[in-house]
Length: 551
Image 1 (cartoon, rainbow, N blue to C red):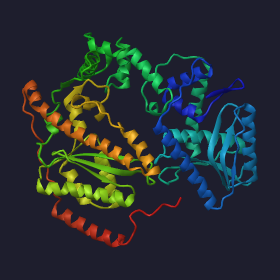
Image 2 (cartoon, helix red, strand yellow):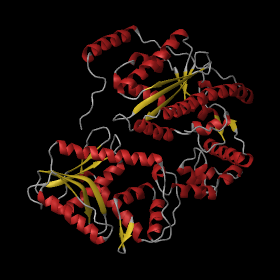
Image 3 (spheres, rainbow, N blue to C red):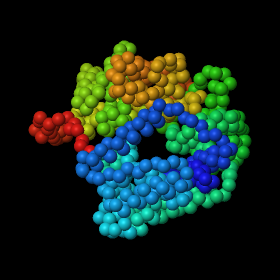
Image 4 (cartoon, rainbow, N blue to C red):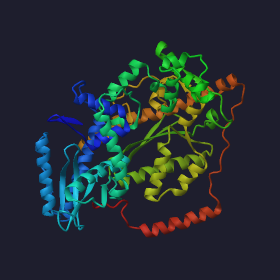
């Protein structure tokens, strides 16, 4: 969104941003009027995404050359209305010429501006002659997102005005190498509705809006501005676990700050929030205010909603228990790479399994599973503890990718060997933290970290640096970070075990241990798995682990 020669120019990103966050649109409008200065956001993770996006786009462009397609590249003539029309005319000339592919096509109608990654010629008559064009946009995502479909819809509408007929299809070249297509007419009505809403808002003048946390915050240049406002306002969005709808209901009842929620004794039954939920968010706010005032993290145990939940999810500790954390790079190896399997045992020993390509990833996966199964054979009561759902999901994904260790992973899942401590935390206590991530919760049981790498996003950036320069010191830093995550999970487990007698005394109950689940498959399933394994071995004998994909 910008003013050019006194005219407001809108883009697809303005449209998708408006649908994500109306406050973002008001910030951008204020910036175009000179009332605010657009902040600059230096974010290595976003820079990494941008770099991979450019590489993905270039790879797609190179594929046209390999396919002997003629390609016209449209030049950028500047940021004036005249320059936009000039670039549009150059695009239209390329369309009339019938070139196979137009790269960086400028699409402009005097108000909406877009730069399509590619226009591809199709044998469908139009005002251009016996051919027309369809939009192809490259996206790093591995599935079609709503924003990408809205963007390609806008580009398709602008192309329709230039060639005299709407394209039948629009295409996304995704990060996993697939290229799904979508019928433009299925999305055009929603496009018109969304455009009309944004155009009405931009024509109406300033509107009072308030920032609310949305997914787009992670990539928004106004993120720090909005975060500062939340803190200045002591906004309810800072209350961990409070839903947006609940914050609105509280606000309508006159409770608009964390401090107000923490101290209110008023009967808020008319909010439409259930009593139990209301008490929980009130206590959450109270604990957060307490930490602000004292500087000391605090917690409050919750009575179990059902006997088998909360601390009852913790099996009895054994000396064979393991504590597990993985590091992954979503951009590596054409589809993402699980490059480090970190394991910490009850004696304090850390074991890293590294993987820098598909062959090594398969071996690291197998070695980790074999380690767990070996310990399980020696001690059937052992468990693997992790925090949140990523690790079991990754193991299932790797099992499917390589067609190996299916029976073993199935045994781990069937026997409930993998224990998610995040579930235990969320069901058993409230913490005086604005987040229940591991990094936030560990303030309850360990000191602040001083590692070179402090969060998962930083580890991805670091691993990408290692890919570029192969500096062993970088891998050492990543290993230290992963070991700290594993150690933190171990310490959390010990801390939660210490809460069991505390909870039993507080609530006058006996907290049971989980009943051990049978992990061995039935004889029939064993035989079926054996036959499948034999067939797989015969079919894949001599085949590469992961043949390179040809774009």
